[in-house]
Length: 439
Image 1: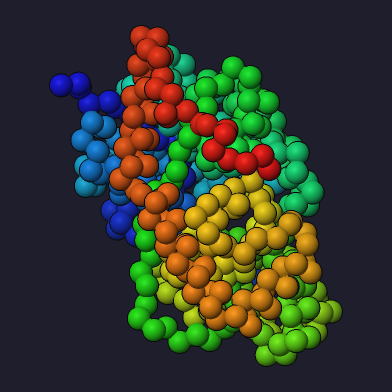
Image 2: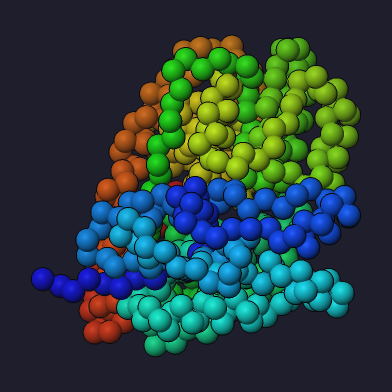
């Protein structure tokens, strides 16, 4: 019998389970300062990156893996804190952004490209103590922890791509590019050898950055959200995201509501998620300009994801015109809640219609088509029933957590054996570009 493989994830997440075991506290000085500056109270109890939680939950049953997870966590009253929970060892550290002195120093000197030395030291210390066989970096686009990959040597590192920041379309669809994040991701891509992604465009971008890369295919596991029994449908459409931004398509959604209102005056849209106050002001101006102030409401980010899932079930349909993601988690969540989805043609959304029209898709930035699909679903009850049918089929056949997580465990083992012994990697674990149509 093979010895357990020691795997360590470096990521950023939070959920109620781990917060129960963490010493969390907002400092009195910071609380006082925020009040004096008329800023809202700092929150430390927010769910974050649910896909990491879902992965961890599934790996509790994988006996061949000994798992440690390293993550920053805002609000820690100590520098480092480790816990054992349900067979997994969690290691949290207080990130440098939690220190007012550090934040003030960077702001005073206008430091745009911090080295995150404190974070890197704390991550390196955990790694030295754990002595893992394989390290898994989940997301290179977040410098405050992904920069630690540059410090690792002698241990194989797999980068699981949540997205690829170095996407030439980023400026077009998001309106801004952080040069530091861009350059750091490029440096990480060029340093590492092993990658995993779930979209053809991400695979191609990784190979563009590093032609020698070995690219696997992964599917993040999903915890199926709770379906409510006969929820009251208060809204026609819901737009939801962790962050309400241009690249998520909120501006297109507002414009589409303006078009649909001409035929359906009472059409309603619920916008759910955290929104920067300045950006929200610009959205309100847009809403007023299109004459839909009475048709759109905002709900702030829900600290618990389960509460958000309960809330969005008040809508009949989901309007999610995301522009940069492959298959956004929000779309998968809506499908699992039997909420028919209207979206844009990204690098992965056409795959959702593999077994039939599960999602109504139109070209990115084609707001007229977006509105036509909205009116189409409003006028045809049979259409939404068929979409729910094909959504359930896709979820059952393509999103089986047991299969996907065991393939992840095989990937970790394959990387270790290849790195240590030169063992050939099983072909079925590698990304097969023929499975996805060219975007």
